[in-house]
Amino acid sequence: MFKLYIFSRHSRSEGDLVTFRNFVKLIVAQDDLEAMIMDPHWRSIHETCNPCTIPYDFIGQFERLPEDEPFLLRWLGADRALSRLPADKLRNGAAHVTRRYFSELDAALKLSFFAKYFLDYVSFDYEFW
Image (cartoon, rainbow, N blue to C red):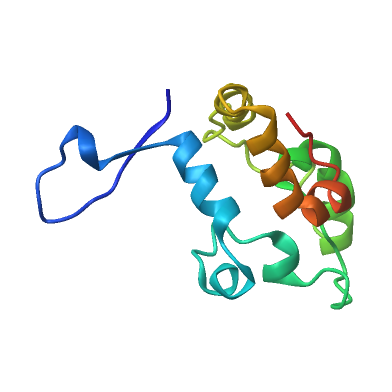
């Protein structure tokens, strides 16, 4: 089970642990105003980057970097100097871990989360677990 500590100057007891389920419930419960000021790591891509209103030259996904890499290198004009980007030694299997965490949620909470990030899921072809 995923556990997140709420850090403080005080002791970290079991009461300070936040489960993944409770974290998702907190994110889902955010209203529009709270979502605007929430930690940028939890904010939707649409709220952060406005991909429908800003004419970006390139939108890539880290998850699909191996597929995007040749185009990205050509677009940057670096394809003559680099045939590939430097190897990513920090891959951590996040997709696998995410699937496992989401498998612990009931269908209603998964759907609420999906609804909150709906535009990101459909715009960027993210898998919905």
